[in-house]
Amino acid sequence: MKKTLVILALTIFSFANAQKGTVLVSGNVSFWANKDSDQGSESKYENFNFSPKVGYQFKDNWTVGVEAGFLSSKNEYTYQENESNNQERITKNFSAGAFVRYSKSLSQMFLIYTDLGVGYQNHKETETNSFSTPSTTKTTFDGVYANFAPGLFINIKNNFGLNFGIGGLTYSNTKSDRNNGSSSNFYFNFGQTFSAGISKNF
Image 1 (spheres, rainbow, N blue to C red):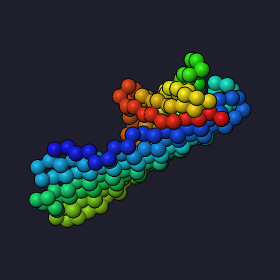
Image 2 (image 1 turned 30 degrees about the horizontal axis):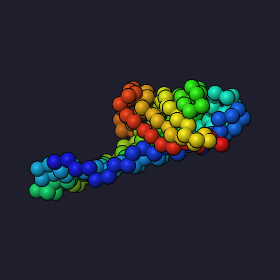
Image 3 (image 1 turned 45 degrees about the vertical axis):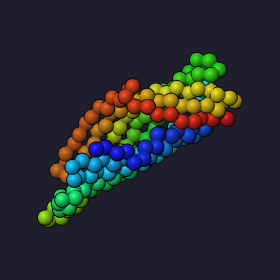
């Protein structure tokens, strides 16, 4: 039986100046957790993510800047009948790069924008197993990323409003410190995820 303990939707805090020659400061903050129980086993999952951005709007429709990402997640698997099978995985991600944003006003109420970001990423995984012989394995991945993410801003009053995102496209290329293994992936979740938050233009 699946039970959801806590689900906090992605919250976006964005403070931006829509005029040329101004500074954009924005960021995404999210926390998500759930709990699954099924026939003597239980799994718990927690995820926290924070992604700030700072940019300079050099033209009315164009902004360039720097971005970063911090993600921490924890997976726990426990078995009531055999605790020696319990497992735990902790993941920590860090990324830093540059982005360019193009925005276009549709009316005084609606504005659409698209962010394109590229940069460096670091991914660390720690797995602990309480088998007959307990063990802990640590793996580090380093590499590059590129992402494309469109969004919609709705102006409620005095440039204060709501941001909405519906996913995008991400490319990731990483190399592991274990046996020099490498991985290259495309993630397409356009129309499959949803984010909502608040925004203020000064």
